[in-house]
Image (cartoon, rainbow, N blue to C red; front, side):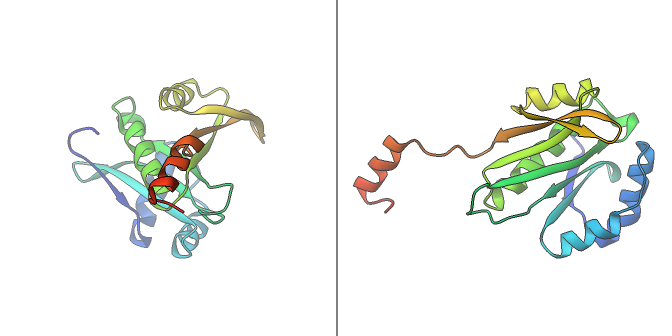
Length: 169
């Protein structure tokens, strides 16, 4: 994580900050009310990255389904870093923080969608261990859903040994 970088969970009070961040990267600021409703219902977590107190990026973690029932997958979306702060490790730090949220909530896998033409993001995700799950089609062009296993399933031999030792039933 970059020195001076702080990643925190966004609250409703951060909505204007998120709107501004989205505009800085060329996205629309609409839909944040629905995101904060999902946050209040426990279906999403929004993280904001600040550098020396100023907002420089954000990411959303979508938590649908039940963590103990397959598929146990959290979905990462809306990863953004403002143009002046790109290529400084902030995107990677946000990605790792999102993965940590997913693990802490009991999910084992993470997915995300990326435009096929976004070579910088594809490189970051692949370097971070994400692999192509399927090809998708955005309204504006082709893309991919990528997947990463965050908590590997124990192999059966280890599980049998743990059961024999009485650690698990």
